[in-house]
Image (cartoon, rainbow, N blue to C red; front, side, top):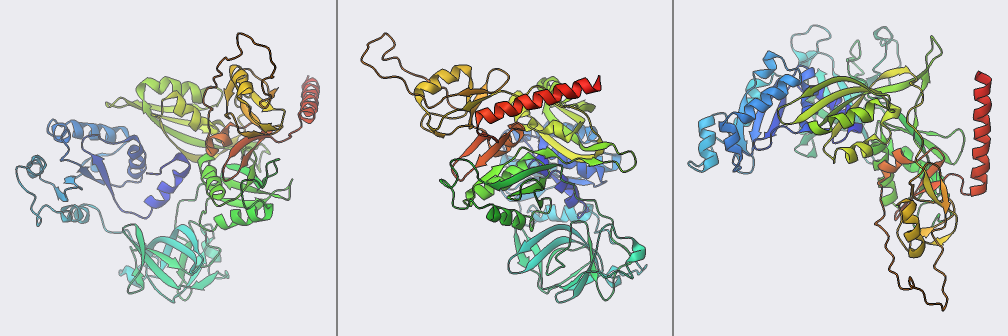
Length: 583
């Protein structure tokens, strides 16, 4: 499964390397929502699955199998995902990974599950599953460039599915070989994915010598012995040209192919943020790496293994770097890794990557397909959230017997900012969201309503329990007593629109007068803590994120309240003038 919507595009790239799938389902629970998404992509590519009902020895599993409940649920799942008759005619393997047995015979599976008969190690081992895969999944589909009957005699051609970097081995490339053979010390040439076939013979193709070859054995990467691979193998090559990109074709320099392989493009980045060194009043107190140049070097090194990231220098601030990525979580993972390494950073609000149409001059923005699986009782909430201010369009909606509803939307990428946190709250964490880039379309206009007001500190020091107890009545707090605050730092969310400058440092006055409330106990609700990816989608345009190894703080880009107020008045006058000009 993709794990998260930001990485859903990786599923399609991996599916291009395979010829079949095994659908592993818990016999007691049925197909999960995450599994349905990957299964739908596999079915769309025409792959026929082998069904593996695992954990058949669970106490409540066999009753569901005998009554046909599991099969009915899976049949309905396949039907709802658009499977054809050929794909629905799948083979079922009953298994228990824990006990180490597998069989295609329902009666034997019942005996093994109930303990009536011990599994035969010769006829009911996991070898049954491997034999079923060999019998039902077709051999690799090979490409022919010169019409040679033996694919190994064809020129070598391999599609790059993933690209990485190793400090000792250099540039790495993992992919599937579609024709020919390759061995260690062969010189390979690189054909870009979009190169015209007519230009290949005369082009000066980048070339390099293969220094090592690897294959995956389980979850580990091991050297290939002997170091030679042929058509149909999935291998990792070390020493490929440094400028290789996902989707490019590798071929032998001495006998190149006459065209690039057809591969799905990598999903383009849709978000950009600016990251620089920490510039807050508390800079350098919690981390060991603060210099903006060190931050930029770390970001650039990340692009060696994370091919979906792109790092450039900021046009407005030479100390900052612009990072292009797929979504909030992908950025959040990168920032979290850096803070654990001792970096202190300032992160700007995310911006959508727009473009201009060459023919019409119209402003374009990315649109995405959003697939949501959720409990049926929350389907109305999801529709209201996406089709309102977020400008989403509902395309499909289908219900299943297990009480789930699948909905397909088309929505501007801007409409997804902050959506993960919101939908998790609205659906009590039951929604599974996946989204894929569709295309660039005309700008959809203003999205969202009034920005949420914030409680902004106007003093420096440690927050005081007395002040926080009073401020808790004005909104939701992000800090607790004893935390360091400074002028311009956001300490909470206001219950009303507009920012409110408050003093979280002020202590209770001390005197010798006795009052009824003298010994009153103060109570402050627990602070609301956001993760980095949640704050990326939560902060307003005039705010930035301060990230250190110990803390994550939200603050105003301009710390001085007077300067912020004057800038707000100027923006208001400019907006009024623009509106008058339109009239």
